[in-house]
Image (cartoon, rainbow, N blue to C red):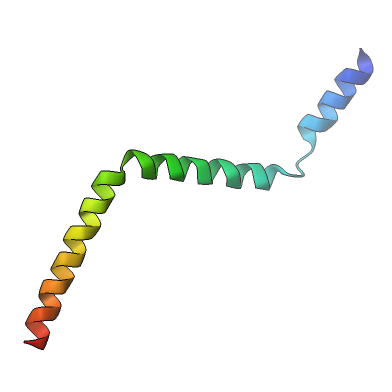
Amino acid sequence: MTTVKNVWKRFWKSESGLGTLEIILIIAVVIIIALLFKDWIIELIERLMGKADDQADKIFS
């Protein structure tokens, strides 16, 4: 029983691989947010590109 407890303590205190786990969790959260707001993001980008196109037409006309 004490060996399992010691192994668990060493595992819990070990920080190797912690950076990888954090990066994976951050990427997963960003992907989930992007999927939830996909339609809104696409609409926003289309509006911005439309405005940029209008401005470019004004400059080059």
